[in-house]
Image (cartoon, rainbow, N blue to C red):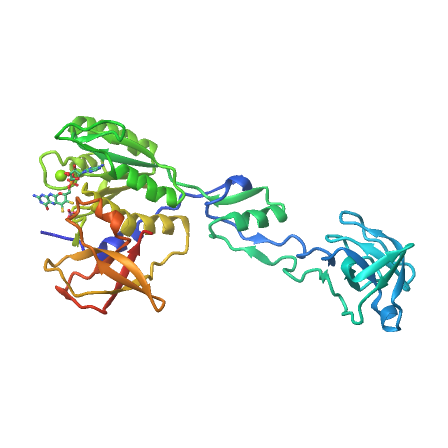
Length: 398
Ligand SMILES: Nc1nc2c(c(=O)[nH]1)N[C@H]1C(S)=C(S)[C@@H](COP(=O)(O)OP(=O)(O)OC[C@H]3O[C@@H](n4cnc5c(N)ncnc54)[C@H](O)[C@@H]3O)O[C@H]1N2
Ligand code: MOO
Ligand SMILES: [Mg+2]
């Protein structure tokens, strides 16, 4: 049997990423998308010496000469052009967000002064130059990169896009994805299954994983009929960029997916990976179309999507991504087959380190166990005994 190693399978997949291009969208629609341009400061941040307390502004030289009472010359409001203090022995009332008036260099908040008959008297003995003034360009200078290309846009980025006037923003185009389940035994979530049936669950797990990646995927279900499969998949290959299948890739009489895909001109990159669960995983390409056909057992579909689709998608869109997470095995564990084993584990923390306690479950059909576990510990295929205290790569889905 010709099995592809997990490492090789991932390498093939990552060598087959697709550039889906760039589109320009309304900035308010861009949350969760991958930025495809550097966002530059169009002016200094802040763009002028910005008053940061409500109060008065004065020329500190007058204060140094012992002056404590200042006649109010005018009011500098936020949103008004800059005023000039004509007499350096006077003061200007100044509001938070206003430009600092010309000829002034310190702001004293209202709490530290009394105003009577148009005269402000200070109750302070010490002032500092440019106190309560947010200096022009202190945060960022004109031309500085505020957000780097390939960053995922979140609420923090939305504010920055707004402040530099990027009402339209360039983001990575998203592929059109369809998630397809197959099988006569599967009924809809709202239906009551007969004794020989189960509800269709894998597609929804996949929908949810993809949602977290910012992808809105469509879904479909096809019965185990080769001709119907062929017609429908041909249509999907025309209308979608990425096809994710769950089921019908193993050795069963009704496992038609690999042969149907190949008959439709999809080139197999590999079929069957040296792993458990998920061994019958099939991966192929037809020009720019990418096809992940995951084995139907729920845990197989789940872990294979996390291990292979997630990094493929992130690399395709240019998102910086390496999963370097590891965890310490909490107890001895034995796994005999020479397959990479994705061991289900519960994660706890001890002294800042992740501890992985095996809760292996009842095999790749046991989807309820995924709820009790938090992650998969990736145990290499060249060993049988894994010792408490050893460190292994982790795929954390919490
Ligand atoms: N003779 C052999 N039989 C099997 C092998 C093998 O090597 N030789 N491999 C086993 C392994 S490992 C796996 S994994 C499964 C993979 O099966 P398929 O990809 O062909 O999937 P199905 O046969 O369609 O279904 C398997 C299982 O999963 C359930 N399923 C399928 N789709 C869904 C869904 N959307 N939601 C919930 N559950 C689903 C399905 O009812 C079956 O119970 O093959 C082994 N057999
Ligand atoms: O690979 Mo299968 O997923 O072991 O059950
Ligand atoms: Mg099967």
